[in-house]
Amino acid sequence: MFSTRVKLTAAFVAGLIAITITLFLAILAARSNAVYHDIAQYAAAQGDLAARVITDADQAGEAVMATSDTALIPLLTPRLANRLQSVPGYIVVVDTAGRAVYRSPDVMRLQGIDMTTLQTQLQDLPQSGEALIFSLDSLQEKVLFVSHSLAGSPRGLSRIASGALATRATAVPREYMLDAVIIVSLIIGAGGVGAFVYLGSPQRQLAQITTEMAAITDGRSLHRRLSLGAEATDFSDLTTTLNAMIARLEMSFAGLRRFTADASHELKTPLAVLRADVERAMMESSSQTERMVALEEALQEVRRMSDLVESLLTLARADEGRFDLHREPVELQPLVQEVYETALILGEAQGVTVNLPFTADVMVMGDRTRLRQLFLNLVTNAIKYTPAGGKVELGLGRHPDNVTFAVRDTGIGISAADFPHIFERFWRADRVRSRMSERGGFGLGLAISQWIAQAHGGTLTASSRLGRGSLFTVTLPLGGDGQRQ
Ligand code: ADP
Image 1 (cartoon, rainbow, N blue to C red):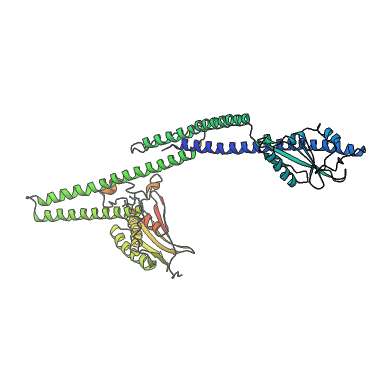
Image 2 (cartoon, rainbow, N blue to C red; image 1 turned 180 degrees about the vertical axis):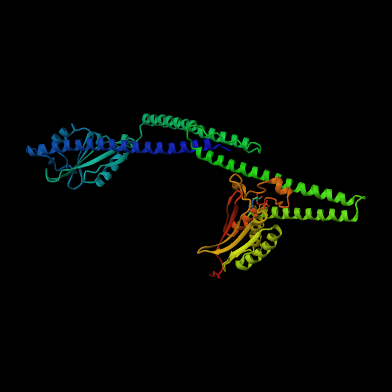
């Protein structure tokens, strides 16, 4: 297969050939037009000269026509004919009956067949001064004739047809052809070489981008970028776009690696605990009670792992864009009331006061189970991260365009340094402590909550101050027919 460089050069050369040939033909046409005019002018001048000879003789009172009765065709007087012979070229004087009363020596030299052609062609010769070109076989030439009117004076004569050889007006001179072929070949050759050389630069740049891309995308070099030369080239935009793509790939590969490492790490701890519990339960020296305690603990770890796997599956589906949401009109007030009642029980166990000072009668289009999961995540976090004696407040509000569900707590809050990470997967403000303590989340709750809010066309936002508490707000678009007050 030909390279793009060769194909583009070929297209350029083809264009060049077409343009040069068109130009050549145009020059040729212009040139033959000019020669044609020159010849026509020359012929007309000879005609004028002949006419002047005749009219001068007539005006001087000389006889114009021979008066011999024996002649079948009337002729000019021999004296006048003699004088006319000094006018060179093909001259034919025609009388009013269309008969040739004088033929110049050049005309007389024509052979029979050409004489007939001349006779018929001259009958068609336009009076207007327009020229007529036709071939004469015996001469193997073309001749051009123009007509000169003699109407009026002297009596009996109609016009003079004067002609000159015209082959050079229609034929392309050989040396001209040779020049043209040399010039055209030079132009095409130079153009082709020029185009090929010029196209070499983009081809080299493209080849360089391809080589660098191949080296980068081997999987281990995503930190590298394509080199952008100092000068802007046709490929600068492409290079910038590819670099941006590599950066995004690098980020998502890093995210994927971190996610896999975190997930395996999170599974490692409960698996180790589970193994220890099972070994303890299987020890012969263990009492029945000890065995029951070990199995109870093992069951708890299994539940924990199930929760983790469930959360990971949810996020994996969200990443794939498979939002398995079962949308239906959902009355939020009863849902929030339900969440509030659960929160009361959880809060009581933690020594945290839970309040629901205001709710609104609102409806959204959504997945009831997912919305409950979202609200419960925020409420359990608020209770989890609020020490005994603190307060957690829930609120459901209706606004002109949307609905908000807010959870405010007076808990430990989040530091400014930690805050940007709270929606990241597996992120926890204090990993060690939260895994060891009964708080023990996986750091996936807020990531899932954010996905649920976004999958409903809404948002999850937060604000927090370390030691002062946090506020998490879910905003959902109003939906369904029942947009009530
Ligand atoms: P976890 O299961 O660890 O709670 P989340 O994704 O729900 O995971 O939360 C991520 C981290 O954000 C938590 O580990 C905690 O450090 C912080 N966080 C979440 N909610 C609150 C809150 N109400 N108060 C203080 N910190 C919070």
